[in-house]
Image 1 (cartoon, rainbow, N blue to C red):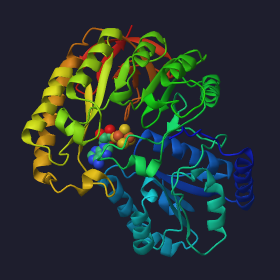
Image 2 (cartoon, protein in one colour):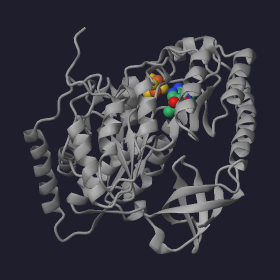
Image 3 (tube, rainbow, N blue to C red):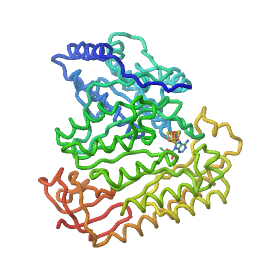
Image 4 (tube, rainbow, N blue to C red):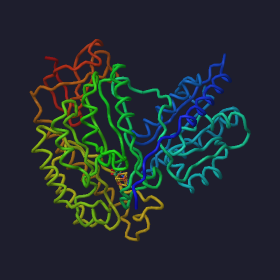
Length: 469
Ligand code: 5AD
Ligand code: SF4
């Protein structure tokens, strides 16, 4: 099969959407129209929501957190686990009354959940008060869809089954001006047997290096200090591009950009973690010493059934290579507990790898059956009770390791990027080390956005406290 070339949506199409932005802006002249945007799921969804917010801002909508005063309520959804879906249904149900009181209110649902036809059918049947439904592939068409919804009594539903091209040049309004999200590729080709992502996000499509570099340059000029390069599997970056680019080369390019002090990236797949990428983490000054490398299970048998394409031993050898090359690197991972057919022995292998690798922290998930994935069809599903027991054990083991690793940091000095006031405080400020550890300290407003050195004087499992030196 030949390689597909990733193409961008044409300028004309983008201009067409900008024309709809202007049409809505005209409708909103002299009015204060507010919107509430609810985002579920990963940072890629957050980045998509920043784009929705950018379009809404240009339409003269103002953001609000209060449904009662909103003219438009949007849900940008996630379907990676059932819990995320149930939350959305809960919110939609609770809006029925408000819609009855305010018939002009527009309720819109978009994002990953909408790429599943049974979900759209369910919403059409059970939540008839939803006005607008669109998916992940046509999000750039939001202005046109919203315009149509504003001018029609009918429900507007537009889902593209196939992934489209990449939309560049649409507006964006970022949640955080210091730390910016930059999506470098969309989609996933891996088809891990438990995962719905490849079905709802489509095949891998990389943005061009020049688009990414220009975006990061702009961020650097506008006082952004840190970029988080995003993709479902960033190590695959460039495989679909005609020119010979890869993620290590992209890191080297972004590393040269002025103004930006730190570069992070996620998520990486162990099967694609190249030596070049390890060297790029080591050699690029701004690339932080932190790697998020999901292992999912410590059992080689389960890894095979998950279609992960590596063994426990291979994963450990990768970690050894990373640690050998990048001094002081922190490591985090994702783990799924209770994949179908997981035995006590398989689970013990997961505990064993936690103890062998000693991750700084682990995101642990109960396996969630996702309709349409191979693992969901299996009859050897693990009972909820067993899953929960294993989950609790895993957390106890990991928390102990995280605490022990942090204990070793006592008295050490770290460079911290100051982010702002700590929650519920007027004098405690918070920031992160290059290794992504949260550090709280007494500071002042002038330090926000600056890199300062801090000596660690108190340890907690999830954060550190220190003094400016
Ligand atoms: N059940 C539980 N966790 C899942 N993840 C992906 N699919 C599922 C599922 N069906 C987890 C994986 C992935 C993270 C983003 O979500 O650990 O790395
Ligand atoms: Fe899902 Fe696997 Fe792709 Fe990650 S790499 S998004 S877990 S299919």
